[in-house]
Image (cartoon, rainbow, N blue to C red; front, side, top):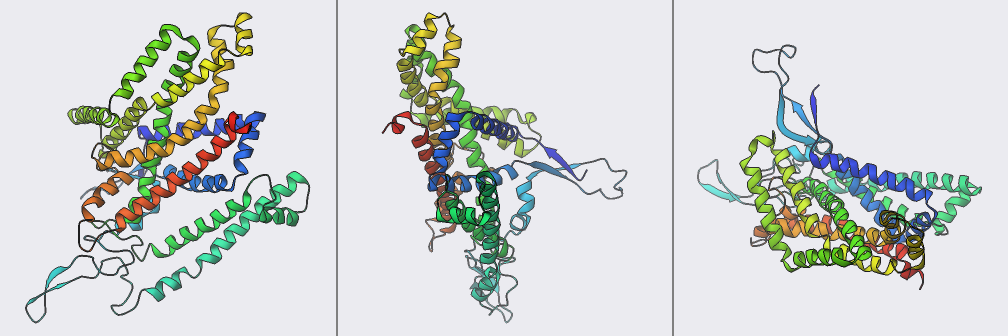
Length: 473
């Protein structure tokens, strides 16, 4: 084989998470109250738009989780048949293969978005003798243009077809949705499409079409311009900032999702146990999360990360590639954040369990001889799941921002791991330059803002749909 598949620990957890989401969707469709609650989420335009945005980010993160190593060419004097298979130590992903033009087109140093010349001046020898300070032409950015040829007409010409592609894709999606609605409701396809465009549907399909149009427009524009220009400029070592921004998405998603999965068992088990059992169990659990809350979280996380880093440094034989080493630190950061962030949800579940254990149906179950495990599984846990779901949706964006803050102060992911935090940390020194190198920080901020804002809007919709107190208003 010309490639060797590589399965990192975080890749395995990402695949397990995808399977769990699929199982959750199937179970939610079979459960009438859950199906109705998710239908209420789908009626909100902001929620449906957020789902489309989060789905695009999830696809990018999934592609970046398909890792492999390339087979090295045969050495001198060896044929491809007799050579033993030797693979590169560099671990790539499917996203790296798709973005190969961006990854391989590295300049010497900074260049502004759509620039044809380097941002920094260099001293060059003049043909007639002497020296001069100039901004040299980029090796790849706008290299197809002549020296005096303007960039704007070329950019406009390359973008001319993108609105038509966006319209075609959006129209195809509208036709597909219209056919599905027509089949389910027994109406004409044209009438179904009219209802979708008019917003007279149970789900906010019109907002989905708008976001899909804008997303396809941006993606098509990137496909048209990225092979010829550095759309978002380059960083200090000449790497394309658009490539770095897309690579940062997986790190943010892994931090937000895997940390939540690690946190949930602690929060759910200890929270409902403290609230339902009471007594010394409640006292012990309250003492535990009170002690954890009294320790500054940044100091606790910093100490844990540094201890983990020392253990990784002293056992290099555990990792065959640098990617496995960086992945181990990323997984360790997820575990540390999960272990230190379960206390808030635990306190909420404890309070809800204290209320639920006094209700009539729980008292009746206890009177009929139901065991504690049966009551917790059948009566307490299902009735606190709305709090768990709301907290998971809200905590995702908090954890994405936490990674950026921790990487900014130097206790986040491995420096070789591309993330929004490492991009912001690298851009810190660039802001002191004159003129300011602003595009690295702006790109990281824009992508992170889009991800966090979509997650927050979706979390608000989930809270409104699943919170019983809001349904009674």
